[in-house]
Image 1 (cartoon, rainbow, N blue to C red):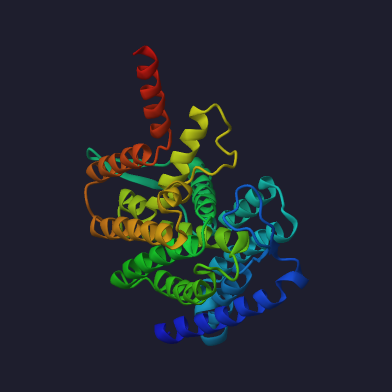
Image 2: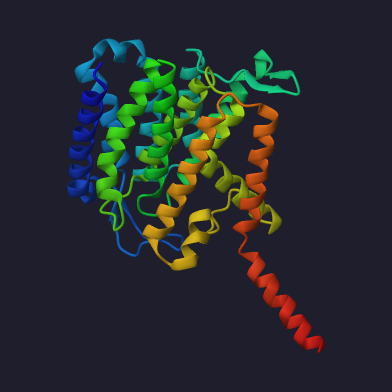
Length: 343
């Protein structure tokens, strides 16, 4: 299959799909109404994921039916997630419903050998996941990252750009190892996201919605599992670094404050970084640069020692945990106030 043709057609179909959604979003009921956690103040069209994910699903069907039929289970699983996202965009379904769709989609992957059965070797000992736990572990890993990318969708162009960086990384890995699935699926998303970002870059004309963020997170998760055939598990952590850091840091902060780790708030990395300059494009570009850096590191460390790579990853997590801690300002103010009172 001609990769350039594949990418170009995905771009064209995505552009048309997103354009039509902007035009008819209100009639279809796909609008985003601002709330306390929103970064926008106007009612906006959303569910652009319906446009660009359908482009990913339809493009190979139009120009290479053989590839589509060979990997039908991949496209079926993505379609399941897309349906969940569209339902959530229109009817605001419960988390349980969304997780049931992710469960079903992961099951499709599992029955076609897309699974996590090893965590790599540490100090010369390989950590193999017992057979009866393979699906459970795979499901939680897929569901966890799908949700993590969904949480990154908080500023114009952010989630789409972060996902684009990751798809480029997986395209490079697929290209080096001649993995047709990784090459073609990544190329499809690269073309589709390029078109979507034309409309989503600040100031955005449309949001991707859960139809987009859930499908992107799921697709990146399945490509991550596929890439484990060629790269070490700890290297994959770097390829997915920013959403992972963001999710675990936010959950830890909430637990420290005695809140539920799943309670929504405005303490994500993009919220905290936005407060530095109050500039959406600055925040988005900085986070994109961070993910590009982590992706390059992950690609370079694809065959490095898992133990050392994991130590490096944990070190970066510790740095981010403390660097993006807005409580430090308040602690300093309290300390100064206490010293003044004592003097």
